Length: 160
Image 1: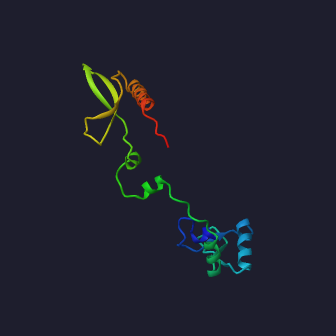
Image 2: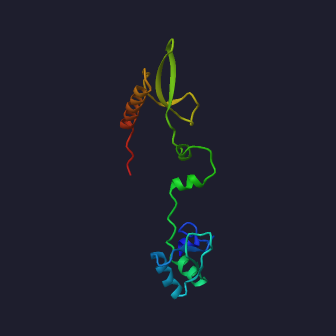
Image 3: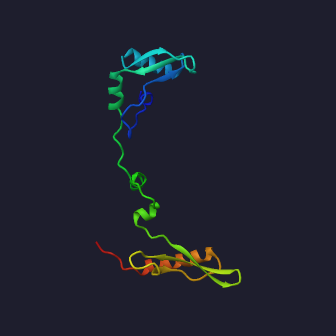
């Protein structure tokens, strides 16, 4: 009945009220039991449809279907992000500073790369974590990860 009404735990207002079934199918047998209990009514399906019978939920059936819905789950932080009207990435929305690559030319058509994490707390050129200059982006990322581990290892532990 919830499917026929188009309701779910996040959307409890009905926007439709029909269910098409083929004669003597498992769905048809289940709906016949609902009709017998006064929770639904049956009718002839339209010519254009592929079903034989169309079922509609009665007011008593709507009450039962809505009351059987589970409580909505608490929204996660990601759900909150999806429902906020922002144009930033999830990490930016959380306030996480993502690392970026810097590049410099070291010869004709040759570049070196390093990965850094800039802090918005100061100014654009301030980097709180910085890897070494490397010939490839992959090596630069590995160097950045080493620098990150070193900073995390030297950070003072917070005691509760």
